[in-house]
Length: 174
Image (tube, rainbow, N blue to C red; front, side, top):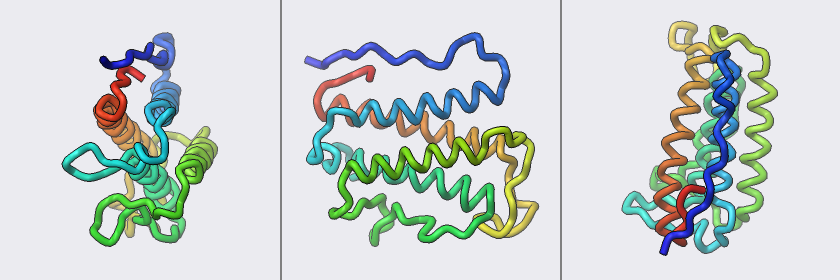
């Protein structure tokens, strides 16, 4: 029988400023992803339950790289070593066997903290700098677009983790 967990409250419904809502929901979904992984042992974190073959740990590693690709390499235009480092030789998400789950989580949390600091107070209409992910100004999106893209990616992956967690141990609503 599935174990039901009370959902964590969303950001307050009193928020009306679009930037505050965007920042709050990004943090909310970052937290949702981590909560969905809480309590899973290393075996479950490294086990796939889906036909596509990804594991919960690979998804967390992927999200770390997503933040780096979109904000450091994309928005700031900085060089990034191995921007697609979440992909293995078969072009699927990959986490090296010798990388412990605690380290994957720490890297994710560190990247999220860096991302928050980097975009704090930056206007949403500021365009990404060319030279990193985007070769020209014409292809460089605004920060608002990048943050909304991150939000939808987190929301989609959090939903996928709902299914994986239920299949792993019956926990729903976490």
